[in-house]
Length: 192
Image 1 (cartoon, rainbow, N blue to C red):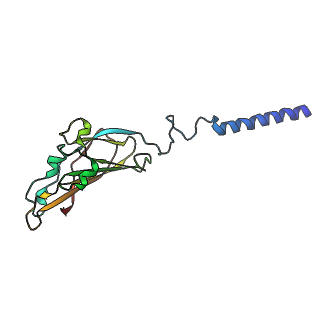
Image 2 (cartoon, rainbow, N blue to C red):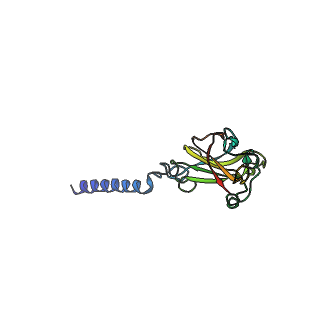
Image 3 (cartoon, helix red, strand yellow):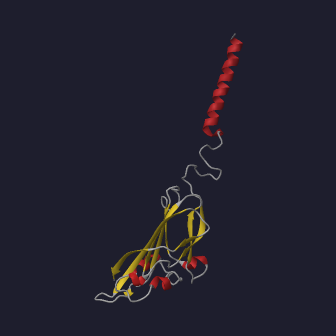
């Protein structure tokens, strides 16, 4: 009887020891993907794709008192402005384009799921095009918000001819080989 009790005790201890080992590391990396990241949306693989901006439905002459054409089409969409991000917005005579991408499915993308870019058409190897390479989430939907500011100048008639128009685009997207933007809304016209 003593011998039988020792055998049962031995197998019970061996079984408990096996369960303990499996729960503390012998279980094959539970909760991790093979690449070492956590599953469940916290890691976010990304890919670089071209963002192409078109003038689309922008009509600068639809703005009251506008006398001259669209400045960003010459300065941004054709690659004219690729200087430091901090100076572009502050130098109101320059055109300025700010791009924000937000995703709720990838907290590791950018800063808590948001990444921003300042327009730089030269980053795709061509200084004079309307294309810029951006990094997007590879497996999650996202929102793109673009603020496109006209360079400030005397483009208007009336008592205050120097103004700066701003158009915006906002849309929801899924990962794609390229992203083309051609729909805009006039947001505001600021005095310079």
